[in-house]
Picture 1 (tube, rainbow, N blue to C red):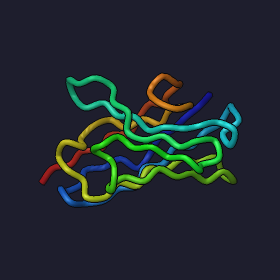
Picture 2 (cartoon, rainbow, N blue to C red):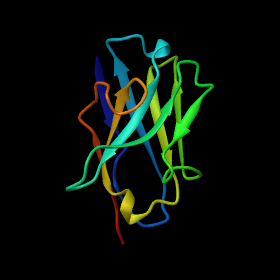
Picture 3 (tube, one colour):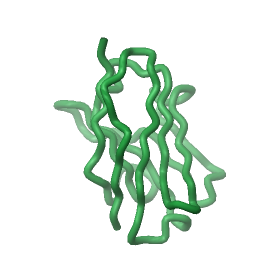
Length: 115
């Protein structure tokens, strides 16, 4: 399993970012996928998950209405569109194999929300 995240950046409150995760080494199109994050000094936190067929997506309360998980199965890429970003969203964001926070993760991409 190899997962490589990108797209993190410094953004002002209210801004948007789209994170990407290039997947390889496993059957991406047959695997549920998730995004998780870890803020400085805090535990790993689940953000969102999408089912194998992408017909079922779930979001953490803080992400509902602001974040959207999606994927491109032709190119094995997982996305996280993040809108209306807040300082509390500052964290390292990881894509993860499977549903929830227990699966293999990439190296992460840093998102910093600050004015």
